[in-house]
Amino acid sequence: MSAAPGSNRSAQHEGTSVNEQVLYDVAIVGYGPVGQVAAGLLGQQGLKIHVSERLRGVYEIPRAIALDHEIMRVFQQLGVADEVERFTEPFSNSEYFGVDGQLIRRMTMLPPPHPQGYTPSLVFTQPPVERALRARVAQMSNVTVELGVEMTRITQDEHGVALTLEREGTTHQIRARYAIACDGGSSAVRTQLEMPLEDLDFDEPWLVADVLVNEKGLAKLPRVSVQYCEPRRPCTLVLGPENHRRWEISLMPGEDPKKAATEEETWKLLSRWIGPEDGRLWRQASYRFHALVAAQWRRGRVFLAGDAAHMQPPFLGQGMCQGIRDAANLSWKLAAVLAGEVRGDAAEALLDSYGHERKAHVRELTSRIKGVGAVICERDEATARARDAKLLADCGGQVQDTPRQDILPCLEEGLLSQRNGTARGTLFPQPWLRTPQGDRRMDEVFGRGWRLVQVAGGSDEMGFAGLRRIDLARAPETEGVVADWMSRHGCIAALVRPDHYVFGVAETQPAIAALLDDAATQLGLGLACEA
Image (cartoon, rainbow, N blue to C red):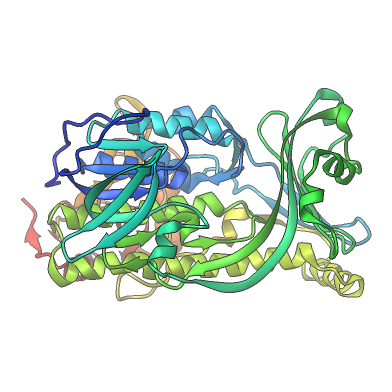
């Protein structure tokens, strides 16, 4: 990349001054998980990054509780996957029970071999994971982090973005070529730039209660996560790591959300399962579960990401995952443009593709999450009984396992091959490979970036700058994950983007050249013969 690491060390303590004349490549507003991942991914590219955050430290109460193998692959890229895994456990099955307490649905884990090289669905403890991400960013001398500062004003012109930051009554300004707003659902950046949210028609009050349950309490609770699809009060029990249990309990018309979030009322709502003698309340808070998505994800040189761009009901635990997908999608595109690898109209199209891809993906996944929510949240008893009967009839009376990952959509538009196909826009697998150093995951062996992956070798075709060729005939798989994937999609090669999504596939050797030409054309690059 053209931007070399700077000499300024991460300013992560109170009182650190920032040179107002420094021009950063990217300014990030907000330093939760999405901002942390964006800072890390962009920092790895050697770009000069500035991060500003209102809070002085990690928020010590868990909010997100679930992540998946795609996100673990991003953490692997950042070099924190091993540390993060210390605070995770496999997500238990989720069993759905209907009006009369009968099992009507079961959501499970994808069976092995795991396609991304990690357990597909996980629960985790958020605060230590955030600390691990921040510690990784702190190792990057080209990333400056200011904590305890408020972004009070954002302006932009054709050359860059200016942020006014305030700390205890004093202000200073920083400038960057681009900015990313990762500052949450009430985003000040989104508000100032008048980037409205579209309502996807879901708005319900719920209580969320996190409990650290003792052994006596654990003995009373189910051994799997449960969705209680009961009209009188729909609710969810999620098994977190170790003794962490989360309840999401719907509030009925007329119930006061503030009163429900008091310790006394929360224990009353939990009394169906446990009492105060069975554990300690870690957090209780009332929320309105929303389904919202930004109408625009980009305004000039400013991009929205995470909760600033979208909010969805929590029924599949995808909120944080969606935000990290945003960061992974946007970071490589910004890096390519800032490095001058993609220029002119192609650069603008590449940056625009971020919003096109992520908005469509978020809308589709939110629609599917709402479908899950409709099963859980039906309040009319007659309709709920009809729902139960239909779900059981659809599976012949025998509930079938539905892997959670089957519900996740692929990319449907954006920087993708002009040819449609079942593989286009899907997440490419990460197999375990046999190497002289032992079994290793593919990204550890070959890195990321644009990759042409083949399983049966073949002649070198035309390529473009930065393209990596991966011949799995020379670095064999241990489990045949990619070979099975290629067979299933009827192809011999896949062109994979830096964020691990499939640009397109080729069914024959001659088709590989056309695939590479398609990508190079969209990126505004020239093809060259491989040496």
